[in-house]
Image: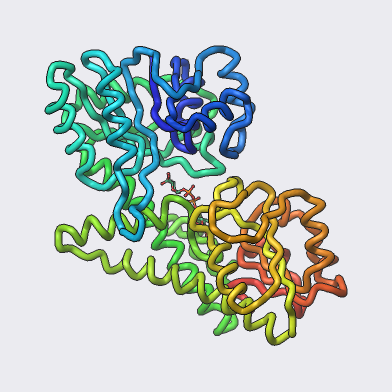
Length: 432
Ligand code: UGA
């Protein structure tokens, strides 16, 4: 099948490459010329595990192309553009979605299907369907909401082994047509379980996406709340998570405490869910509390570091990990920036390291990326904070690092260090 995808970011590119692997001919369109030339030069603007290998394979075979102008006549058009929160607001900016839609209306032929992958507020796809009915009545264009559930850092394995494929529209027949795009997934050896297809109306599909992210955010805020409590009563949150996770009704995933959840999805989607509920005079108090808890937890982490550093008369602190989680170069809404803000106000000298992340924020501090940079930081700082759970940090010899003369503390906000009983090791939910 011929498929055109608008948006070459984390969602559009992974979906496009995945669909090419499933045997489709995919064209990826982005208005950003420099991004498109990066894709075409083989130096993608994003990092994702497996991306380069898949990209080279499918570009060489001609089944995927990147362009600033759509030229392929496709039956299926995916919208996978960004929906950032409106500056200073609580809801998503849909300008890019509508601009992609206008483009599709122009280039598409009769009976094409437009599939929304971008995460949009409830009610958007219905309005998009009304819009295309109004402005291009003769073309019989159909909209289908097909939310994405990919996690950055695991995006390809999530694409090839999905937990579910949700398709929402006002026509079951059209949704079923879209489901056929994924049919060859079932032949793949990567699949560990049968694919669950769920056909719904527009609004339910949109809400499944927001509510899933909201639920996971609640789960994480709960374990982070408990982490702060554990250290006060002499419990270890790592054992608590494990013990709770054995209960299949709870499950062990998304139960690891950390420095506070971030990324381009949980913060934005939980705010959006709350905002859209408020618009119809409903509040979601549990979600609301989870958001507040996360804000407070990030501040608490910064304050704990400051307290320990002041007690030990320390000035130079190294922050390991700027990405909002391991496996990605993305640092949007990363807890690292909350830590940097709090520690900068308290006048600490900071050194930042991350194997992949570059800077999305306004901080003037440089993020260093190489292993040598990491070694320099370990030799020169007096205190270390682990913010991101990169394997590179996990694999360090923490026993040796803790015994270095210059190191007065290691504060592990991800609990990736071995459980050593060392007076300078602080693990979240254990002794901080
Ligand atoms: C999330 C969802 O997990 C995906 O299903 C969804 O498709 C995606 O948002 C999206 O809406 O596009 P992602 O933002 O890539 O994926 O990241 P997650 O793996 O969900 O992590 C979110 C945050 O929770 C990170 O800050 C991470 O460090 C934190 N986390 C996660 C923990 O602190 N502990 C855990 O046990 C798991």
